[in-house]
Image (cartoon, rainbow, N blue to C red; front, side):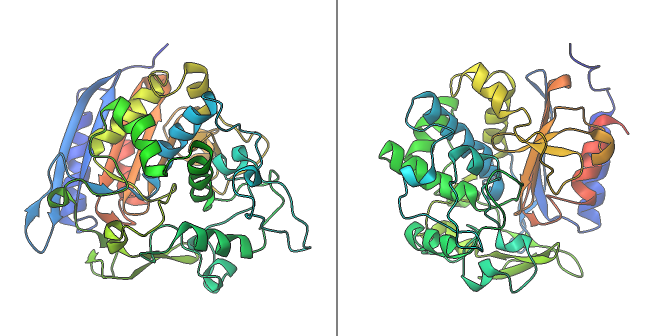
Length: 381
């Protein structure tokens, strides 16, 4: 049974949060959609797509999706599982024989497809670690920088770094989805961009979602948090996040030789993202079967803690275990994630509620006061 519907004032509360964020120069611009029981009850393009040119944000603006890529690629992967092209228990080496990262003791554990989907493979992200980490030393790309870097070279760099833990024993947010993308491509004999287009984007009418930008005139300009407000990203831009630094190279989007990053490489609109999330909420068709969607959106790592209190992980994104520990008004079973270019989304299935918030401002649009305030405005807390 669904919870009580949104009250009549929720839109005005969101407006106040957004207006304040623009006035206080926390974000430059963005697009938000709020759907309840399949109906879009609130939509707003706000701020500027390009501040220096004075170009206003449009509802059909295209964003560099960063980790909003992950649920799209995960859905495509599970479609391949249903088709028998890959299995969750398959070892990665079945498809990429040379990908054999080792533990510090030189042992070579098996890494499975399921561990890639759940970020329990022993891999890591360089940006999630202090400066001078092994991923940085090996010049591993997190999928956001180094235009022109090939998949073969990045896989070799990843495999050269010792695993952070024995696969299956812990959770660590990581480049696992990039490895999974290559598994998918080899298993299906097609490029990852073609697979995602055929298995997800075309069936759902996600016409602006791709690894390439289909209309550059609608692509938003990326900005990053700065001391006195957002600053326009340069050719290579470092943004502090936790103990580490996120390395951005916005031009990567236009470098065709860059590997197709299954974790961060896609571009798309808020409307397209909503189509995917609503499809999964309603049962997955025509992309995946209902039982697969149910497994995807359930906690798949029971007994393993993530680095986010109160949150577990499904087959592609976080799943809420304990609202009190997570300090959120969302219900148990809510699934969510975001993207470092400045995005946040969630689905609260108990309320049939889906929210997509895409901005052009890293990191403020993804984590912290602004997305938390938007969430609380929706719930009225």
